[in-house]
Structures are given as C-alpha cells and as structure tokens.
Length: 235
Image (cartoon, rainbow, N blue to C red):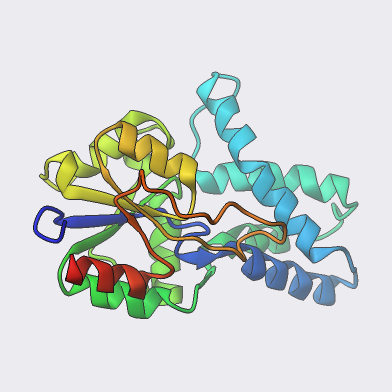
C-alpha cells in the first residue's frame, strides 16, 4: 500500500480535532461571562446533532447553499432559543459560532500528521468551509499541505463530487488517494467512489459509546495517526 498511495485526505471534525470538549469549553466560558449555567455537554451534542439535518435541508432545496459557518449559526440560533439564551449579545453569538474555528486537536494529531507529511501529501477533505479550516489549522498547528473543502465543489460529503474532486484537484487517480476518518459512513462513501480508506477510532468523540470496531473492508485500521504511519511504513 505504501507504494500505491500518494495522498492522505482527512475528515476533520472528530477525526483530527476534538470538537465536543472544545465546544464544551467555549460555551462554559461564555456562561461564566454572562452568568448562566447549562449542561455544556448536552449543548455541544445538540449543536453537532443539527449538522446533518441542516445539510439535508440544503440538499433538498429547502435552504440555499451555505457554508458550514452559516449552517452552524442557523443551528446555534435555534439552540439559543431552546436553552433560553437569546439575551446574549450579537458579538458573543458570533464569537461562539467561530468556536468551530478554534477546535483543539486530539493528542496524536499534530505529531502524527507531521510524520505522515514526510512521505505523503496530507490535506483536509471536510465539509468545513475553507476559512474555518485555515483558521483551525493556524490555531491547532495542523501541518496541512492543502485545504480541500466541500465548499470548493458546492456540495457536502457524502456527495461523490467531494471524493472524486479531491483526487482530481491533486492530479491523482482515485486509488492513489486515501481518506482517513473516524466515521464509517464517510469511509464507506469514499470506498464506494474509488478511494482507499483508513479507519481511526475516536472513542471519546461523543459521550455515548461509538462504533470503534475495526473492519476488514477498510484498507487500514489504526489506533492513532502514529499507528497509521507505522502501518504504512511497514506495508
């Protein structure tokens, strides 16, 4: 596999960065500033849970195309009503919405990506918009070679254009590009459209139990980016 894969493209939210703990921290800080206390973990999970339904509304034509910042704000405004927090200032709302630009990496992410970068092109293949991914890379010190976003294709994963488009923009055959992700639905779509796949379980992405079982259908199953590097090096 080492000699056939030239580029590794990464799902970002949950695979490279720990969105839930990061959002928990941001809403808790905002609560301290504004004098409110809520279930930070539930708020974060609710915000993330609105992500796919919002994208589906765009796909069905119920909403115009908008980037993930726009969808995050749409979901946030609904949550502020649900949690009775509409009194916070517009500045605080904008700052909280940009929390997705400031997500912290998993412990192995920076070191693992840095090692993988020595031998492969590494980049994002995320539904996050380009400005979000660039700001996140700066904040979290993620050493990407390139930022590829669904925004470039005008459609979200799992649309085939995002997977095929990633390979096309890199000038590579699809089977020389590998998607690295913690989410099996993402990997299954990548595999369906001709990309190689690597599964990295992130058992702490959600507070509830997630499916972290290795599966033979993926080209690689690794416990971390460092483990993936070792497996690729020895393959």
